[in-house]
Amino acid sequence: MTVFQALVLGVFQGLGEFLPISSSAHLVLIPWVFNWPYAGLTFDVALHIGTLISVVAFFWRDWLSLIYSALRRDGTQEERLFWYLVVATIPGAAMGYLFEEQAETIFRTPLLIGTLLIVMGILLYWVDRRAASVKDIQNLSLFGSLLIGLSQAFAIIPGVSRSGATMTAGRAIGLTREAAARFSFLLSTPIIVGAGVFKLKDITPGDINAAFITGVVASAVVGFISIGFLLRYLARHSFGVFAWYRFIVGSAVIIIALLR
Image (cartoon, rainbow, N blue to C red; front, side, top):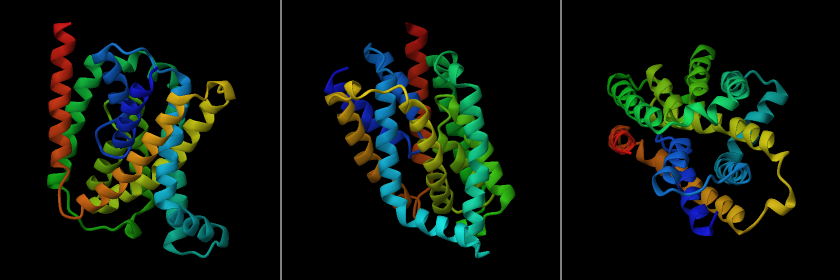
């Protein structure tokens, strides 16, 4: 893998991990379109490290407060939110463990990815337009957090989008757009940590090269910017632009796959 390829994939990882457009779909489709070689396990770890850095850098104060409340067992909404995040993490972690092999093989077909980009884009658009914006993250219930966690489990399939699925579920239960995004970002932290640690055991110091470092830096910087951008954007706008993006890209992928 060249440094340029690592830069491109790192940028799309930073964008797609937090914007509802599916990072895994773009990491499959970009090499497929341009006939680039498979980046490999080492680079997957680099991208996970990068996005972990970005989300921790953005939300470290939130996590410190949540963990402190949980350790104190102070009975506040922050303590409940911590345990809601724990509960919501379980379905996604279980699905990733059970279907890791399928996620690396049969789930990566361009036709499936293109179709899911369109389907999930339509669902996001429809739910966002019809849902009531009545709840902040402090009003989230255990049932609501579990529903969001179950939606995250389907993100193992490229094209679904972890952030897209969880934000759609958040909107469906009445969270405001900002609250749905914030809970989605907090929920991403343990999943990214788990994925990175699970794969890190197979990495040696000799695997760390210029492409690895480029992937880490690009995904971290772009990821941090993406989080801040989306939280500000959703304060005044809907998810419509992301739904349209998914529809256009998904349609293009299906056309290319059929022509090939």
